[in-house]
Length: 332
Ligand code: BMA
Image 1 (cartoon, rainbow, N blue to C red):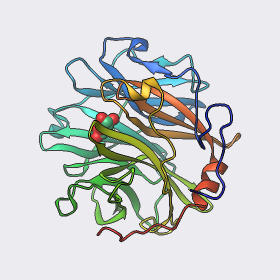
Image 2: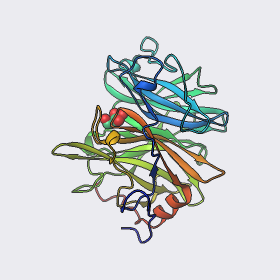
Image 3: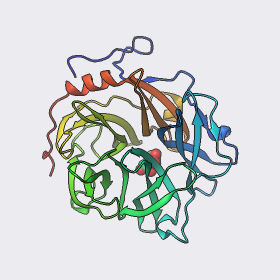
Image 4: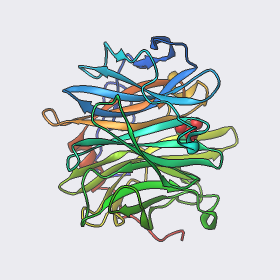
């Protein structure tokens, strides 16, 4: 356990960094302007001084698309597109045969555009695709960045040593059944190489022992790149998706400086424990308010709804700075 932790006195005797919005969930299928099965796992960003979510919407066939919801306070009065914002286009992009899922949004100041990394569900399995947009109406698809099977990807907001960096989670036969977080670099956001492993699943009884994946895009801090990731443990009654944090070196993000031993957020509430897939908290976006220093984390609950939890960035940084140095090569 960390020496110092942040106590959420109002909610539980446990040590909590993130505080749930009491009226969670903030968005469900019932809020949608058209008929859907579920809404969950949204990417998130700031857009014209509002919070924009790009929700994963699963239709009643079981296939997903992305639809945006915009709100001034990021909590209520969501304006939701009345038709899908970004739909799979399997004719032009065969890799999107079975839909598009789980967006992560990064503002790229150099291009004056947002990059949306998303999962294209191809007939070979899920793969990582990237699109650029400046209005969240038209999306310029750059095509697959990584072949199947690969997902949980987000870009760093700026070039590192002249190259774009992408964190992602390939399934690599050599390391099966575990799945780790990797880093690839590109000059042009289209051709990706120099892949290297960054964060590994821990073995044995750990909470993140079977699969891990990046949750939200990295946040740049003076101490390094702060990342949030989900970790899966498979149990006799199914998988549990929980969250951890790590700090990566600013100049070489394949170097993990610190990593939480303990999970920092887990399914507890009924909307996280019960749904289409039980016991899942799955963030794809967090938004930092520069004025208040608060991070709003948007996450899917049990693959069925969208919920919100907030933490002070300074608390997250302090917490991770007291975490152990990462044992990168423990498994490989
Ligand atoms: C992962 C992704 C997520 C989903 C989670 C739990 O593999 O497919 O979209 O929320 O499983 O079902």
